Image (cartoon, rainbow over all chains, first blue to last red):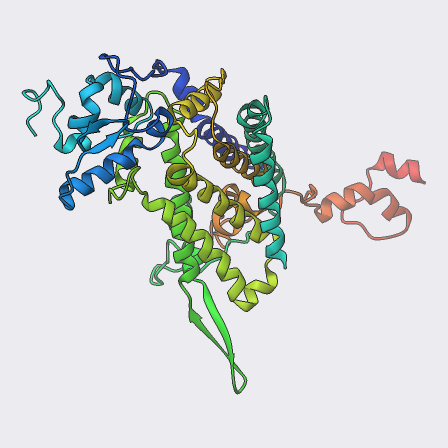
Length: 131
Length: 342
């Protein structure tokens, strides 16, 4: 083999780069796989089935935001005889009261940064966050 | 119809993964065994390729120069186009790899009435390549959020920048569009430009179709086919893969296995196809050699070892025979030897 002095370090760098996740995870403390916290109040019903909410809650929240803030359609949604006002804090967080456990645990684990909290204040944290 | 075959192969791969992953027990094949196998083929294959290349000697100093080489002091030396030192070579290689300078020089030739040939600068290939490669790079780095636990800050930044338009939910990424667009542009270039079309082979079309399908299945999984796509489950599997303890927590939708299987196919195909240019670009002698052939003699490593042979040495070797044959010699035989012969 020619040019060993550059080829071998080059190959080592390549292998280290490709296996980066392997040794990064080996040298960092893993977090537990998050489990969604069920509503503390014991509510069983939501605006949509659990699987659908899990997969596309962000789409629904986005639609609600557009309808309420941009089109002024504030009519409540009625599902199974129960009325839900369109809004993160008015509907979702009525039952799922704990933001850290219900929202943040999965979002942090998968590095999802929803910009809900750019405008919304975390319930109970209103005094701390002022931006 | 070389391009049609590429589509057929990719469709076949999609069908295999789509149907195969639905058979009970098979998710472990598609989600665990094949990714490990593909990754080993990728790593092993790339290292093998590079070692094979490194074993081939470079008999001549064959750098391509595009500017004035180092000469007399009053002649301006083009340091980047005709590098004379290692530092200049490194600078040239860096710009080649990061900005694709050789594609920037692409020209379009046309025959006009006369007949005469014209050449004009054609930057499209360069633009398409930049869109394609940088989108692909950002997407690969962005995917690290699914493999790394905890997610390092620079991946957050990259994701934020990529989704800066904040369109839709989940956020729409610039690079997703870039990759699809890049694939389509490079593919249509091969179809539309006649002289490129005639030299295009299945192994030119296939990677483009495959990468397009990977991007498309990824986008479908993120925005449209959300059934059983729970990102927490997926991350659990992928972190499991890289910590060597993979588990499939709950059922994951077929689109995920299709996406993953196509990526595995790409990884396994990578080292043995034209895609290995990502390693080859570092080892191309026309770029990584110094343009110093007037200052330093390039010695072909496979030259046999031939030592200089002076006349004095020649005479030393054959003196007896020369004297014997009556050929005049510069240095006479020693008396003892002369006696022996006579």
